[in-house]
Image (cartoon, rainbow, N blue to C red; front, side, top):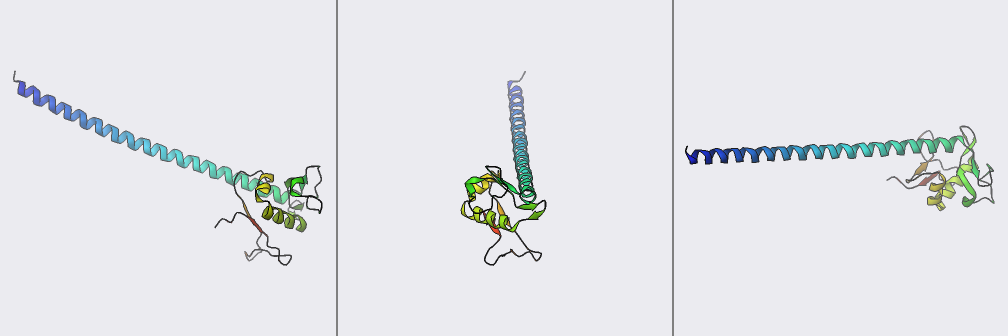
Length: 154
């Protein structure tokens, strides 16, 4: 037989094998990239869902609970109490009714001791709290008290 024939056939098979391996590697790289992107999106969605759930839980608790001091009293907003005596903050006078004094003290504490208040709210991420009126303007009552605190989301 002709050795030139086998040599050309061997080269053709080698070239075919190299092309097949190259295509396989490109497809494999594309699949891995898509997989990693989907995995990252999934992790981000889970994080955002957890953040939303924690935020809703915290807001619900703020609006429905009177809060509590370390010694068990629900009057955490009264004068001698400090943020260090606060076990957890609650703004409610009763379920769904905010007590003005608690709201003012909450804003004051959060503005002066943001990290401590964040810990008292059991949050592991930054928060921003703002109280708006029906026209979507920040409430500033009593005069000079702006009902806004936390890390500005802007």
